[in-house]
Image (cartoon, rainbow, N blue to C red):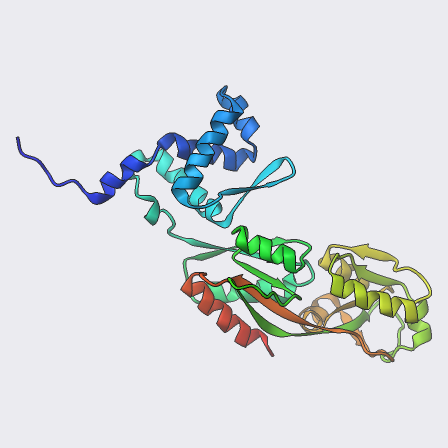
Length: 306
């Protein structure tokens, strides 16, 4: 009886348990081992054991616990996107080494940094016509949180005001970030050069953050130049722009954001009798990051530093 050569790729499929992949998809979509166990009418320990096997097979933690939920790692996001069509078409099943066809760049920033980097980075990804898709998330960041996000592979790149020092993380300065005081062109009578007395009594909108650097500088300004609390603290950067544009409130935002949105929101810049703080913006990523993404970040750094 004639025999035919067997593809090494087909042989490699014998190492894959389809049940593990289907359980992975269910855990990914439901974010809970117990919910998957209830759905399949099996024990939670059986689901956990299957997940442990898949983690060993993939060489990745796949999920990290956050409260009662399981959050996917960067690798798990990519794996899920590619497993679904394979589940639908078993005849086209490929080895895991070729699952990921489109690279997803998972980006973390603080909310006030988002308008500085996300539009620019998206524009560059589209311009080079790459196979990179962008997933953007915001979070309160510090050095420990940034290191955790990168080491746990929940993020590919993190943009922040923190310079991270770690043996497996590349951190590079993107630009200096100068802050400016803004007011509405249509709803305020503030002079172009504001006095300490006016600033002390003005309604001021602020960004609500846990960033230690911002909190420190804000406390100095408030202690010396403010007689009342800010009228609003918000985590929404867009809300600051809208509220300032529609009221007589003042706001403090990065100069680059003002340059971009001044005309859209009809904002004007006010000179202050005191110096506003300046921050530096950094990008942090793992050293083994994809070469295309690495080159994109280098180009991004050069072009944003204007």
